[in-house]
Every structure is written in structure tokens, then in C-alpha cells.
Image 1: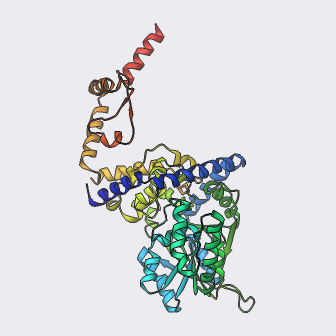
Image 2: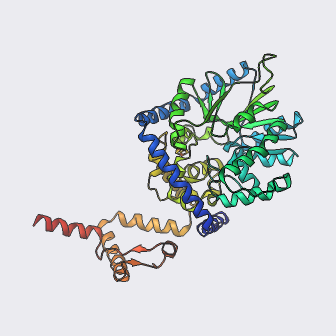
Image 3: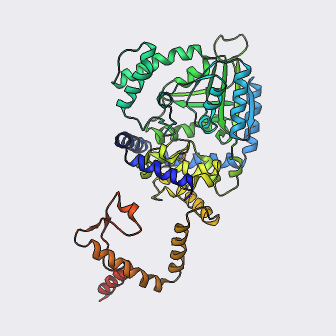
Length: 476
Ligand code: SF4
């Protein structure tokens, strides 16, 4: 087992033993899933919209170069600038360069997973620039010196009590003497602290949910309004977005908006949908940024085009696959050890970060298919995870014992009669082991499985024998 695998297993064990995490995850999971179900039930056209969203994305991905060029042209016409970054390092350097040249000392940021992907905060802080996250969840994880554990709810792993203590620790030196514990008081305190940062900020950096080629606009969908304050108050606005975020037109945007909020939070629409298309118009308005920059990040995305993983580029980062994932809900986002957790992260991370350091992610999945059925753009996540496993098998990256077990299994299933004979003995033994209690508490070579759950006692005969018997009785 390599060091990355050992570390992954350590994180998972820690997560499974963390009662506060369990409490926070249980609280969150029901809310997301039930609200999504309700929102979809109230919108009969949802499945038509999903199909339309998938078709738009597929069309764009087939013509990505064309739409990116149109988008760039429009941004330039609007008075903005577009920067192209092939790698994460290049992207963070471009942003750092823009910040340093403008003499910025303080930067406010709206939530942006791609900025996490390119390690932007670390890069800017090393240059002596203060970075303030302004999305409440991001602000909480920043205070805790952690990474987001969910792509739309970064602090979902924290209980209210933990947040309350965190605020007390960090806000007391700012003059907030009381430890607030009510939800509304926590929000109010965050608002009050962040207000000063918004006013003092030199540059606002956000991500983008979509980039519209037709108008050269970047679109941010939020529930907190921090995106607007981040984008419009400072003198420079920087948008950092993956190249796959481009869509053709405003009309297409209306399709995505109808599926995004319903899939993400179970809302009809998020509270704020804002479009930014460039710097403030000359002398016409006093508000809005004087400079507008868009950094388009590739970082492995273009190599997914035309591959069996292209459909992953349809992802609109709604988080529904995480909310429905049994593994994610048991271990939380940090245990994955990647910026993007859950099913979408297990597919995406090996593609942008390499297989070698992410061997366990595609295997941390039960393949129950809930992620695929909940995905608003029909990404076949379980199929893509299987593709990853095949790749690992071919490259001999998975552990030798695992490969050996699969080799034996393949040998046996190709010889059905022999397979049945070989299987009959362990099945019989398991039945003897568990028939008194109805469950088995420990199985040789499967101690990891039985250490956290009971194994139901199987029938004394294999399924095929049982089935043949029943068919015989039925025919008699
Ligand atoms: S893979 Fe699908 S469900 Fe998961 S975040 Fe992306 S769009 Fe949403």
C-alpha cells in the first residue's frame, strides 16, 4: 500500500470515529435530499430540462474552442481582459501578478472551487496579500484553517456549536465580546465583520457558475449576496473559471438556472443570480470595478475532451451527487483528501491530479447509482468510476491483493460450473457461522467490513442452486 493510500485510510478511520461530524452530516443530508425531491415534484418539466441541459453542454463541449473564442471577443468588446491558463500554477500566477501590479493589499473572495483547485489563497498570502473569504461557509472554513468539505456548502461538516466557538475565538479580539450561538446571531456577526472587509477591499475575486458567449458575461448564483459585494465594490474584479463553464446564450442560461438551484438546495431559484460583463462604463456610473479580468483555467480539462471522460465536463457543480452519496454522507468531504469530494470529485480528481496520488478515490464508492440518477446533466458517474478502476487495473496501480482477487474471480466466472462448486463451500461455512444469530460478526479476510457492520447470514446454498430448486418445485 502506498503512502497516499495509507493516509486516505487514516482519514477515513478518523472521520468514521468523529461523532460531531456524524451529527453535522446527518443534519445536512436529509435537508438537501428532501428539499430537492420536493422541488422536482413541483416542477413537472424538470426531466425535460435535464435533457436539455445535457444536450447544451454536449453541444458546447463539441465546439468548445469556438464558444471560448466568441466569449473572449465579447469580453474584450466590453472593456475587459481575458487570460488563458494551462495549469493551476499558471492560473494562480496570473492572478497574483494582477494583484501585485495593482498594489493590492486586501482581497475579498466569493466562493470559487476553481480557486481552491489552483491553490490561490496560499499563493496570494505568500505575496503578503490578505485574502478574505466572504461566503459564510467559506469564511467559517477559512477561520478554522480548513478546506471546504462540500462544493456548495463548504462548512457542512461543522456543528453550530463548533461555529459558535470559532467565531468567539476569532471575533473577540475585534470587539465582539459575546459568544453567539443562535443561527441568526451567527449570521449577523459574520455580516458585521465582513462589511468592513468589503469596503476596504482592493480587488474582488469570484468564480463563475456560467460564462455566456453571446454577451461575454460571467454568472454567479448565490444565496448570500456576497458575490455582488465582492464583484462591484473593489476597483478591480477578477473572475476565475474553468474553460468548461462557457454556454452559448442567455436563453441557454435559463435552462441551467431551472435545474441548478433545484438540484443543489431544492430551491426554485437561488436568492441572487448576477451577471457581470465588464468594467464600469466610462464616466457613466460611479460604481463598479475600473478593471475586469477573466482567467480561464484549463488544468487538465482539454485533455478530457474527446476522451471517455468528456461527460464529466458537463458538471455544473450543484452538489446533488454528494448529497445522495452514502460514502460521502458517512465520511464527509475532508476524508477524500481532494478539493472536489464525493462522486464528482472521485471522477475529476484523478483526471486533473493524476492517478498515482488518487488511487483510492474511484474505489471509495458502492456504485449504487444514486449519484447518476440525481445528476441534473446526466453524468454517468458510476460508469466513469468503473473506467478509472479499469485504468488502475491496467496500470497496475491498485494493490496486488485486490488485483489477485479479481484475477481469481475472472478465472472462476468464465467457468460457471467450477465457479458454483468453489462457491458452495464458503457459502455453507458462512451459513454455519451465522445461522444461530442470523448475522456474522467476523469473517476471515473481511475484518474491515465486519468491524463496522454485521454481515447477514446467507442461505446454506448458493443462489443458483436455490433458484434451480425453486424452479423445479414450481414446474412440478
Ligand atoms: S456531477 Fe452532476 S450531480 Fe455532481 S455536482 Fe456535477 S452536476 Fe451536480
